[in-house]
Amino acid sequence: MVVAENPRVRKKIKLTRADTVFNITVRVVAVLALVISLYPLYFVVIASISSPEAISLGKVVFLPKEINFDAYQFVLKESRIWSGYANTIFYTVFGTVFGTAVVLMAAFALSRKELWGRNVIMKLMVFTMFFSGGLIPTYMVVNGLGLVNTRLVLILLGSVSVYNMIIARTFFQNTLPEELFEAAELDGCGTARFFLQIALPLSKAIVAVIALYVAVSHWNSYFTAMIYTTNTKLYPLQLVLRDILILGQSLTNITDASELEAMAERQRIAQIIKYVVIIVSSAPAIAAYPFLQKYFVQGVMIGSVKG
Image (cartoon, rainbow, N blue to C red):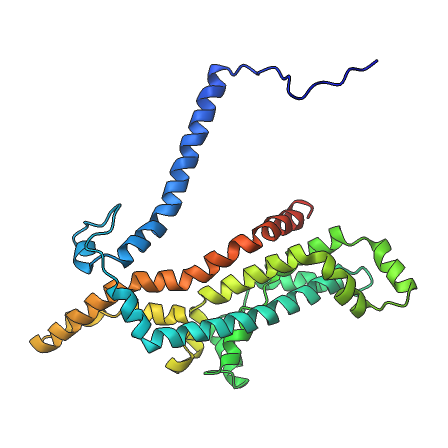
């Protein structure tokens, strides 16, 4: 006769001195890592509502000084920031849809054993992760296609990632059994229908992961716009933020007193609003992450550990 152990009655394991020291060390390191990670974000928040003079003098450390909301008022009145915000949302939405669709379709095709030459195709794609044509050849190709100074180039470039495709392919290989495809094929289901109606509904985790990767990449992107666009109406928010951060660099070349005073005022304004713009540009990504966190963790673990 086997007597079931009462889960409430458990012997307390006695920790050794080494275990206690190790646990304390781990907790201290974890707290330090948390503080180091969160303090820059906290500083940006308190600096955005402090006076620029207090920030320049180093008075803003843990609490805001001379609280005011002038920077937020300036941002609400600055049309260039809002146009950049609208452009970034546009590029992120359509770039994410395009990038996620292409990555998932390519990954599913490469996960199928019946695809002829899939190993060669995979090796060629991996080759591009280490070697590329370079900036000038890429610009010549983009210019030859007539995509310079267009919204389309900011949606297409950077949307497709081989790294994301490898993660998705590994997910499909380890999650979708071959018997499921064979059963669907016996019922008259083709490959495209299987992908849309069976594979995708069963792969919500990896869809969320790839969409999050692509969306964050588009949201933070500024280099593509800086290289391929000269029209300020097409600038994303990150490029507008870059212009604001370098607003006061030409002060050393000013000799006229009136111009120097005007430029100093511009630099003061730039110092105030750069913290607000950082919050504005980061808030949507930070707000969306908690809703995708469970899919993010699940998809990454399945795609990496089993690979």
